[in-house]
Length: 76
Image (cartoon, rainbow, N blue to C red; front, side, top):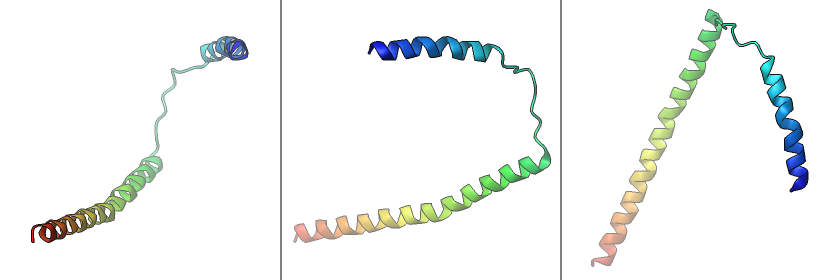
C-alpha cells in the first residue's frame, strides 16, 4: 500500500505539470471529407441496426410461441 501511495505521489504532480503546458485555445475545423467519412460511418451503424431489430423481433416472437405452447400444454 505504501508503494502505491509513493507512485501516486510521484505521478500526480508530473501529470499536473504536463497539463499546465497544453495549449487549448486552437479550434479544429473539419474538412468536408472528414464530415463525409463520419456520415458514412453513421450510415453503416444505422444499416446494421435493421437486421439486429429483425432478429430481436424474431427471438421475441419465438419465445412468445414457446411460452404459449407450454401454457396450453399445462392447462389441458
